[in-house]
Image (cartoon, rainbow over all chains, first blue to last red; front, side, top):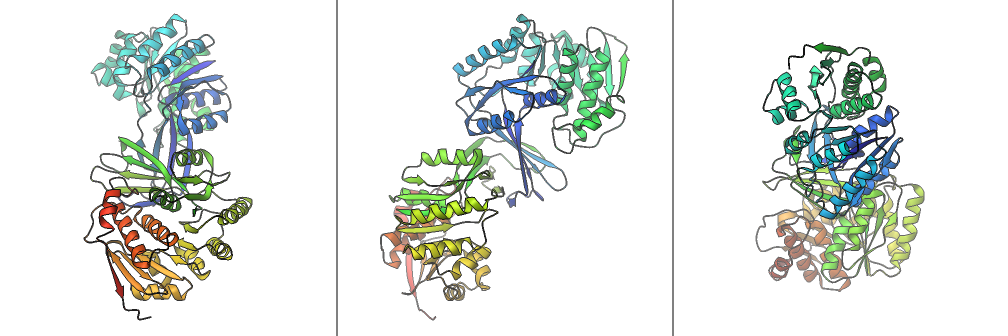
Length: 308
Length: 308
């Protein structure tokens, strides 16, 4: 199975309103709820691609129970979340009639030292049967900033390929622990390396310890720098839609390509097509399967001269 | 005991943010949650005044469970909510650093005919030991628009004094079923009677069937029209603060005065002081006990000539 880790899971709530006016009262016309946090989004896409996925991380409180009930109805995703005393955070996306979104993100629950220890033990047990692991998203309060670095070292000791998708200091420390793959977006990559030039920045990220770097550059697609070469993968034309979850779909594409041992150009084509099919989907964070199947043959993957 | 009915209960969530900007992403700095819906607010104030209170209405889903868990920790309030399949709605109040509030209200869950029948049976059983009952707030989808009229007739048959606090068509139909007391605000009263002149409108509301009318007129206090006379009750000076829940506190004051058989001027002084102490409280919907105890002696209650 593929393991995804989401330490800061969330109950993602979407409200539809006609128009959002500060200091006014609004009738919400439609409410949707789904399990959230990057690793859970990645798991849903992997399951849709036919992979067996286990999710771990933390869940607690009434919101955690709601999240776990919904996960129980998600085919192909096994719930191995570790219980905590604090309540899983909510995120509220308020979408108006024009399709614009106003986002409200609760802080995560405080994780007690004993809960963090319990998670690390559960994680080590889960690695025994994992073909690959993805470490995704932000850290809730109470989890040490070097958490991902430790989890990467544990995965490497267990011989399990590990992908890291986070930002800021947790990314900086995680990269130094030599993960197999990092998937920063343009902003995260620039913050990590100090360079806004993607080619230079991906080279720098590899020097800092990442074995492979795949940067997701929005409309410009993916830029991969690996031990075997450099590639750029881009959809056939500019896409209009909601980019929420596009990066998580790219992670799912990369992970599934990894466990299927696809050559890099095919992995990248899959990741770029999934990402594009997520932008095109009517529901934020879902992917449009028909669009994916059409786009996967249309993505152009270009090998670039490896100057580094 | 005093019974309060809240057919459209809510989990009231308050988010503190620095500033609410449409189409931006916001970090919520503080989250609070409490059982909501007018009848639950009334019950909390009654319990704080030392009354035994039972709450009924509907609760369902993960939000309903969260609400009931919190009710279990509310001293003096007995939970007799009827379980439903649908999920209790949430309301989200986004408070910015300037103290202004943007409100997002989910629609209530659809109530099935069998659930409405189960509620009516539970209600009739609860009336057997009730000294008074308050019917509060909006109706969730699936509950007939004449619901309150039926519940008022049931209370009258059981000999239990009944207070109605709702708006629109449920208020119009409820008033026609001859409740002992209605407590509209200025807007609800005008919508019911077509008159924006409170004295004329309260007279008209009595003609429509309400035995007593106590209108809450914001900063101008309360205007009561009863079989015994007319009174106006107002706090000693204009109050600055958050009016959320001030009407619910007035209802609690009126109900407690009713079961304690206080003369009208005392009932109104209590209701006006509780209402004012709610405006002054730092947390929306709570009342400031010290302010209440100070204000209850300072409210001026004036008998008005009964022209009708």
